[in-house]
Image (cartoon, rainbow, N blue to C red; front, side, top):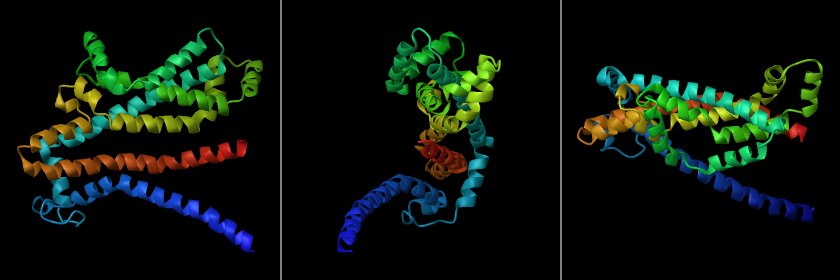
Length: 286
């Protein structure tokens, strides 16, 4: 009994330390979000005169002011962001699924070289590519269009890499061979056999891409000149720049930041059950 109690205490100490570290990390990550949510409830008079986490009474006034600012341009920025993030993430997930499946299940000359180039692409920061992409799209006459933001987001080396890894693990070669023996072509094998097995992994790729595009600032900032095509990140930045001369806009900026977080939180909460299902399935298989 004494030995068992000693082992239990020894195992409990690292567990407690890990819990404390994780709680500290969670508080560190959630602190800015909590500040934005609380600050969005404050009126102009309360914003700089009350405590940091003292809840104010100006939330409805701030939301009304945000909706009325420049005839509702904030909601136009929100729609643009949904277009960029939704369409971009869907197209990117589709391209990643096909490319990852091809790299995982087909043998062709140059496959290893292509995969190594893909790994190299993951290591290149997107910031470095923003200016060359602008020059290329400007030559094509696509600068300051929706396509200028959408097209560079479609090809994601990291998404292709994840899809290749997931296709290798989740799609058995024997199942593909059986479908081919039954007379199915390559497209039918991919669409009817492989893709359903890859759905949990593709949900993860979609969510990564959606969040990355939703929070992207530099690419649309470089590509777009018309503020009616701006996403939320660039739109709120222009509002912040205007707020340097108009402190009254600070409430609208903070409220806009809070509203822009809601779709991301809702998406993560909605899709977390797919991640759990994926992890449970992997645990059983392994």
